[in-house]
Each structure stands twice: as C-alpha cells, then as structure tokens.
Length: 385
Ligand SMILES: *Cc1c(COP(=O)(O)O)cnc(C)c1O
Image: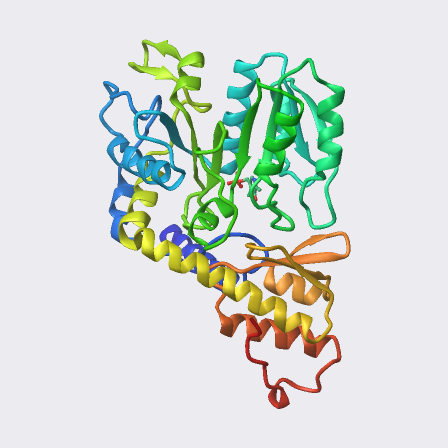
C-alpha cells in the first residue's frame, strides 16, 4: 500500500469512529450539532490574535474584527456598557477562570480565594498557580455553596479581601451559587473590598435565556465572568471572558515586539475560534440560542421525570440541564460516555440529545435494570410539568 492510500484509510477509519462516538455522547457538556463547513476554507490560513483584542497589531493575519463583535454580543447579554467592559476569546472555560482570578490577585495581592468544594478543578489550580490562599467552602448536597460555612470563613478572615469564585452551574451537578446571598453576607460583614468571579462555563449561555432564572450580570457587583463554548458548540475548544475595563488598566503592560499590550494569559491566540463563535451567533442569533437553551432545559426535565416516575434515584437542579442519577452498568456508561462520580453519573442534555435519544437511553437503562421485559411492550409516558 502506498503511503497516500494508508493515510486515506487511517483518516476514513478515524472519521467512522468519531461519527459513532458523537452519536452516543451524553455525559459531557458539548453541543455536537453544529455545522461549520461554511467557514472551513479559513482553515487553510494562519489566524493568530496574539495580544489585546482591541489593539490593532502590525501583524495582519488575525480576526480581531470578529472577536470584537463576539465580545459585544456577550457584553450585551451580561449587561455591561460597551465603554466599560473588556474581554477576549479564550482557549476555554479554564483560561477564563485563570484570567479572572489572576486579575483579582493583581488587584488584591493579599486576597484570599473562596470557592465551594464543587468548583471545577481549574479553580484550585488557579490558587496554586498564582499562590493565593484558598479557603474551600463546604457544599450543600445539591452542589451549591453552603452559605453558613462561607459566612463563617469570611468572619474569621476579616483582614484579607475576599476573592470569590461563584459557580454558575457546577460541572458535576449543575448547581448555581446564589449571588444575592453572597452579596448579602459581604454587606452584613461590611466588607467593601472584594472581587467576584463567576464561573459560568456551561450555564453562562443558558441562564440569560430562561424565564425566572437567577440574574447574574454586571448590573450586580460581579467583576468577571468566564464562559466556555460548550453550549454554542465549537470544533475547537474555546470560550469568552468578560471583565471591567478599569481592572484591566491596572495590570496591562506594553510589549513592543507584538505592537500590542499584554493583557491576555496566552501569547499566541487562536484566530479561528472567534470566527467560529461569530458565525454561530450570526446564524442562530439571540432568538435561536434562546430556543436551544429552553429546549435543553425542558428535555432535561423530561429525562428527570422519566426516571422519577419509575423511582430510579435521580436529581436535577433548577435551571440545569445536568441530570444526575444512580450509576448504571459499565456497558451503558461506556456506550453513552457518561461521567461517573462516586455512585452517580450525569447525563447532560445538550442540543444533540433530543427526546428520541432520551427515550432510547431510558429504554436501555430500564431494560438493563430488569424493570422491563423488552423495549417493544413499553410505552414512554408523556411529559409531566
Ligand atoms: C467545563 C468547565 C470548565 C472548564 O472549561 P474548559 O472549556 O473545559 O476549559 C470550568 N468550569 C466549569 C463549571 C465547567 O463545567
């Protein structure tokens, strides 16, 4: 076999494998139903957005125009005026978290980081990288911060400004920390100097579209927010971080070599991801994204009800698309790529997990649990709302 033929065969095999794995993928929060072929031609070009997204560099192969438009969309969604915000397209939720906590440390060099034990592992990583004292706050059973414990820790450390990471949708249980309660506690203890970073990796593009969901935005005293492209869906992992311009002014340094200012964590930055996000926003718009968010939340409630009416142990946080339930067999976990923790797994209802897929999954689960003789004589119940 010539090398050319061998390479073609390797790639064809890999394509089949990835297509199959994408069909049955339910444990991780990735929207897999996107088609970016319209912008595929740009993958034959180098695009590097190194440096600040708002400073035009000498180097011409970049997509800043698109990055700025993406950031403006997020700024509007998070209610921060055009002239007051700053942000950039990151390599993902992790970089956004690192950035927010780095900024906080620069503003409050002797600050103490507080975050619940259900925080994503990038939060303790930030504490380690930036050498910030980290006080871990206990969690409630649903994954939300234990506010009594938070208050106790705050009152015991009155001399150091708190740097607080709030989870707006935890990784494992989809719990939302209560911003209003945290602000109330800070006010009760008359703490004026504090920094609130919001890790809204997944729910950051869901909550703004859901009626009655908690309002987390810059009209309240938050300082930065990190959102991952999980919900928008992107073949290249990425995300967005937003903060206040006045904070960035404190930390920026001019770098002659790139003809820009060094405001970002990374040097070279992906220039294709802003294009991907821009295309997604342009083609789906506010309305389209809102519809997707509501469908995912409704479908998660549907899955939850399907399990609950059969008394299968399960849990679903309000305004979350992460359904937690008792661990099934290894076979099902492997097939559906479910994420395991202790005796539980979760299934995250993204755009590619429609009701048909949920029905298939529930049938397989119940069949395995011995609650059903076969799929054929089984009728799924209507949704209970
Ligand atoms: C996934 C996730 C992250 C990390 O995002 P990446 O894009 O994978 O870097 C951070 N926080 C939460 C809550 C997450 O779910």
